[in-house]
Amino acid sequence: MASSVVFRCCLIVITNLFMAFDFAHAQPTRAFFVFGDSLADNGNNHLLFTTLRADFPPYGIDYPTHKPTGRFSNGLNIPDIISEQLGLEQTLPYLSPLLLGEKLLVGANFASAGVGILNDTGIQFDDEIASDVNQTLIILFNIPSVSQEADP
Image (cartoon, rainbow, N blue to C red):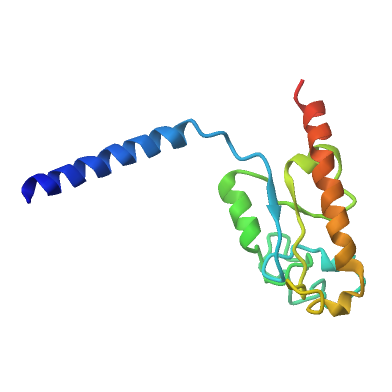
């Protein structure tokens, strides 16, 4: 019985050492892509023709700029916090005119308030969200060419 406990403890220690070694050599995170609803939306609805918007007070009151950003929260949302923890800059909305070139390597936020997994869920968007799948593919296919330009 005692040898079984010692064996398990040794196994746990060895496993943790291997995990620590793996994490020490892990590549840093380079890009962060966000898909979701209002909990992750960082301003996409601000750039869409919809009534589901968060670009007016009191939204943004706790955001660093204290101004509405299109986030459906008072401040940073979960993807913003994850970006900070990974040491990345915040992802831009996929519709942002600033999401070009090297900014594609940071990632993009495709979250939009009011969307769901069914086409009928986001009916207030008419056909905009369906065409967003095409936009997603365009961005993802452009990343390799931008990445090759960035890495000499």
